[in-house]
Image (tube, rainbow, N blue to C red; front, side, top):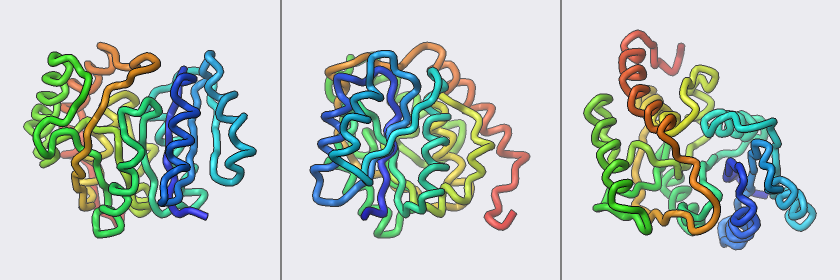
Length: 244
């Protein structure tokens, strides 16, 4: 049995999915894995299902019809995790940009007092491999922009490699999380901090995917840029009391 669930959203990840699943299950710390697949036409879901007998009771898949956005995939996974009473719930990409070896470090941070642990690219310098300089600068200055607007002290505001203690996802009204792209990652951090949870950054090395196709787009970036302002303004009219 495991008290820890790793949620991995997928869309066309056939090159990576079996390798990432096997890597997670090779770790000393036991994790369960939940794949949220948005109707990948490349057969990603079939690969996952072919591994379920081998990892019975540890590997799960939920299939959705068509691309519905990163944020909605994670919200779906969070609700699934809460229904199954996991103590530690993780977000992780399928493409090895997040090193599965760091899962235990994120979990340890939460065991030792953090409510949310972020795998941070920028908490100790800039730790990004295989990104063109333009994308590194865009990501780095996006986090600066988020800090300026929201006043949250997070160096890697757009990071998508995280561990949550169950209480955080039980407290945040997940049905009120508005954004579905990379702004979702900002909104979840901002909301957790507004509710008074302790958010810590754990330094990681982020390595860009070597197989498969990136899902980043101009629309996703625009949503994040404008969404930060909307999120900040909305927060002025919202009650973040845990008793409400």
